[in-house]
Length: 374
Image 1 (tube, rainbow, N blue to C red):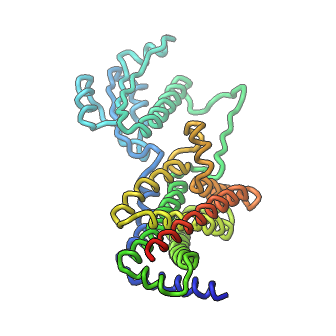
Image 2 (image 1 turned 120 degrees about the horizontal axis):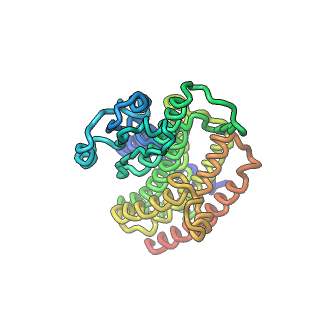
Image 3 (image 1 turned 90 degrees about the horizontal axis):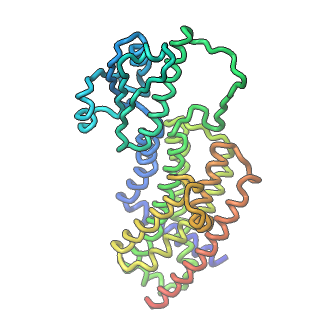
C-alpha cells in the first residue's frame, strides 16, 4: 500500500511538470488535432483532379465523345493540344496524362480493325499514375462499347459480376489514414514524453532529490509511466471522438471500450520503450536521434504505411514481435470490422507479453542507472 501511495504521488508530480511545460503541452495538442487531420485529408489513394490532355487527330464523333467522358472530380477538364506539344507539356509537368487518338480511329474501329490509343503518363507520382491509367482504360472502353452499341444499356452477360466493398464502401482513404495517424502520434508522443521526463530529471538535478528519498527504482519508473500514459490516453480519446469521428466523419464499428483497453496495453509498451531510451541517452540531442531511428522503423513495419503481407517473409516473422504491428491489426478489426474480444485477444496477448518483458528490462536498466548516479 505504501508503494502504491509513492507511485501515485510521483505520478502527480510528473503531471504537474507536464502541465507546467506549455510548449510540450501545445505540441501534444497539435499532434493529436491538426496533424491527424492533415494526414487524413492531405494524402489520398484515389485519383483526384488529375490533369489530362487529348491529342485528337481523328476529329470524329467518337473522339469527341471520348474527350467529353473525362470530368471532375477525378480529372480536370481535358485540354486539347497538338502532337508536337506533347513532349514539352510532359517535361514541364503540365499534364499527368496525355491521350493520343490516331487518325481514322472511328473508321478503322467500324471496319473491324483494332486501332490503338496511346496514353502517355507522367509516372513521377507513381500511385496516382497507376490508378489513373486504370481509370482511363475503363472509361475509354466503356465509352467505345456504348458508342458502337448506340445505347448505354448493356445486353445480358453469361455471368454477372457483383462487387461489394466491405467496411469502407466508398473507398474513403481518410477512414484509414486518420486512425493510422492517431497510432503514429500515440507512439511518437508516448516515447518522447516518457524519455524526456527521465532526461529532464537528470539534467535539472531532481533525480538526485528522488534518490535521497525512500523510493525504489520501480516506484519512480511507474510514476512516470502512468502519468505520461494518462496524458496520451486523454489526448487520444479527444482526437478520436472530436477529430476523427466528428470532424472527419469516420464511423467506429466496434466497441470503444475494447479499443481503449488495447490502447492502454500498447501504452504500457510505449512508455517502457521511452523509459529505456531515456535511460541509455546521455543528452536530449542523443535521445532525439534515437527517436528518429526507433519510431520510423516501428511505423514502417507496423502495417499502417504498407501492408505487412507486402514485406519479405523473413521480415514479416520479425514484425510479429513488434507491438505496433498488433496495435494496427486490432485497431483495424475493432474500428472498421466491428470485431470483438474473440477476434483480437491474440493481438492483446502479444502486446501484453512484449510490453511486460520490455518493461522489466527497462526498469532493470533504470535501476542500474540510478545505482551509478548514487
